[in-house]
Amino acid sequence: MLAIIEAAGWPIWPLIAASITAMAIIAERLWTLRTAVVLPRGLLDDVMRDVQGQGVTRELLDRIARGSALGRVLAAGLRHAHQSRDAMREAVEDAGRAVTHDLGRFLTPLGTIASIAPIMGLLGTVIGMIEIFGSQSPTGNSPAQLAHGISVALYNTALGLIVAIPAMIFHRQFRAHVDSLVVEMESQATRLVDALHPDRRP
Image 1 (cartoon, rainbow, N blue to C red):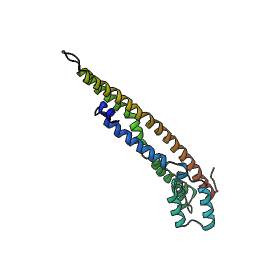
Image 2 (tube, rainbow, N blue to C red):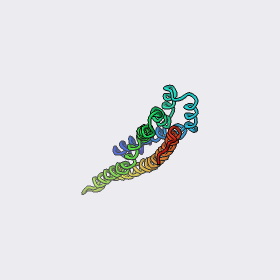
Image 3 (cartoon, rainbow, N blue to C red):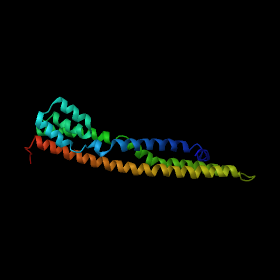
Image 4 (spheres, one colour):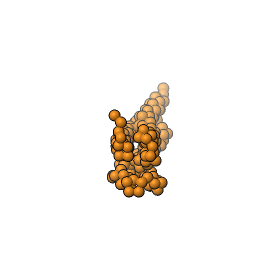
C-alpha cells in the first residue's frame, strides 16, 4: 500500500482524505438511518393507546420525543392536540421539516465527494502527464521520471473512480431512503391528526 502511495505521488493524499471522509459518512448514515430507529414499529399504536389511557402528559411527550425521529413528529402534534386541526397539522409539518433536515445530514458532503473525486483523480492524471513530458529532453528520456509520471497518472485516475463510484451509489441510496422515511412519517402523522380531530374538512 505504501508503495502505491509513493508511486502515485502527492496528488493521492487529497483522494485518501476524501475516501476516509466518505467511509465515515457512509458508516454513520447506515447506523443512523435504520428504519427501526427512525420509524419504530407500532409506535403510533402505542402512542394512541397511551393517550387514550392517561391523556397527553409531559412525561409521555418527553418519552416519545426522545425515542425516534417519528416520535419527535408525533410529540409535536400532541403538544397542540388541544388546539384546532390546522394548528396541530402545522406543528406536525414544522417538526417534520426539522426531522427531514436531520435525516439528510452529511448527504451533501457525500454527494460533493462523489462529484469531485474523479476531478481530483484527473488533476493527478494531468500532473502525471506533466512529469511525463518533463522527462523528455534533447539528450534523451529519463526512464525513472517517465515511469513515475505514468504511475501518478494511472493511480490517481483509478483511485478517483474508486472513491467516486461507491460514494455516488450510497448518496443516491440514502436520498431515496430518506424520502421513503419522510413519506411514511407524514402518513403516520396524518393518522394521528385524523384520530384526534376526526372532523376532517373537505
